[in-house]
Structure formats: structure tokens, C-alpha cells
Amino acid sequence: MEEHVKRYLEYDNKHYEVPEDVRSIPVVDEKTYEEYIIPHLIENGAIPLDQLEVGKTYIGYCRNAHEATWNGKCFDYMRYKWGWFKDTIDHFDSKSGRAGTDVFVPIKIKVNEIEIEKQPDDNGTN
Image (cartoon, rainbow, N blue to C red):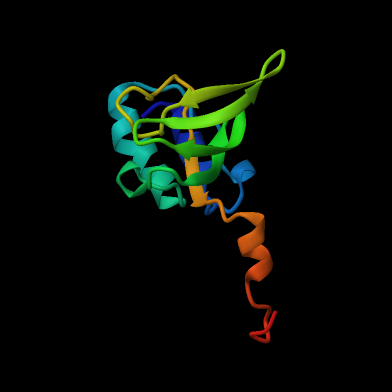
């Protein structure tokens, strides 16, 4: 295994709670990506491709966004580049989004602000 992959696996060792916890994925060959990177991401809290729900918005990480909505094939998200526009990005384990490309690493389903406000406080009331 290449030294930069060893360093990535060693230093990217905390469970993903917020998008900033996800480190940039190193550029590696397909075999290394399949055998080491994908299992490592899942072990640290990334949501596997087969557990995504169509229409759900996920909190996660890619170069240009920290939230994106799964459409069944890829993620839709809003990107800013000389103005806002809708763009798409692949899941880290999709066959089209692989080593060397920017991919989305989902870590949790987004709960909208209204649902958060309705959650009971520590005493069971709200």
C-alpha cells in the first residue's frame, strides 16, 4: 500500500459527526479504493449506497457542498460558481464516482428545522 494511503487511513480515524470530519479522499487505484477506502469510509460512519433513500437530503461532504439529495442515481445539490446552479455528484461507492473524482460522502439524513424544534427536550416535554 502506498504511503499516502497509509497516512490517510491512520489520520482519518474519527467517527464522522459533521461534514468537516470527512477528510478528502486520496487519489488511488481502483483496487485500493475498493479494498481500503470504501470500507474505511463506511466504518467511520459514511452511509453505504444500498442504504440511501430516494428523495432524502443527506448531510455529508464533497468539495462543493455539505448537503445533497439522493435521486436514486446520484446526488443533486446547489453549487455556487459565478452564481447558484443545480449540479449532481456521485456517491463515493457508485461505479461512476470513483478514485480520483470528487464524490459525496453522506453521513446522516438531514432533519429539517421544524422537526428539530418539535423534538422533546431532556425532560420529555417541549
